[in-house]
Image (cartoon, rainbow, N blue to C red; front, top):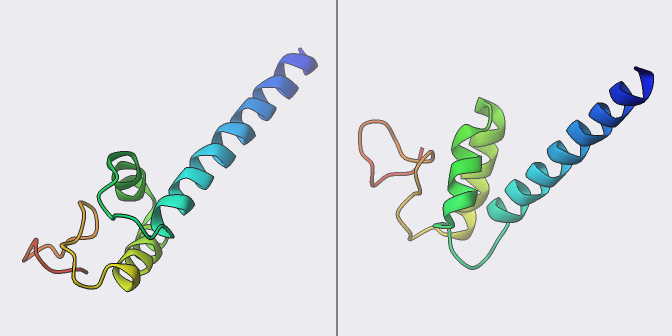
Length: 80
């Protein structure tokens, strides 16, 4: 039983690290703010993490339209 719990914990930690790295790589990229997987990960992050990700993307892509999850509620063409 203890080995199963240990294996489960290792798998959960590995999953969180992989997803976290993928998200971080997306918000700090310099290629495009429109990566589908990155947009989905960022839009599902908790509030403060999502806001930081959107701010990082906006700093890099000032003139681009905001991706889903970073749009202003009233105008989809504006960053939040």
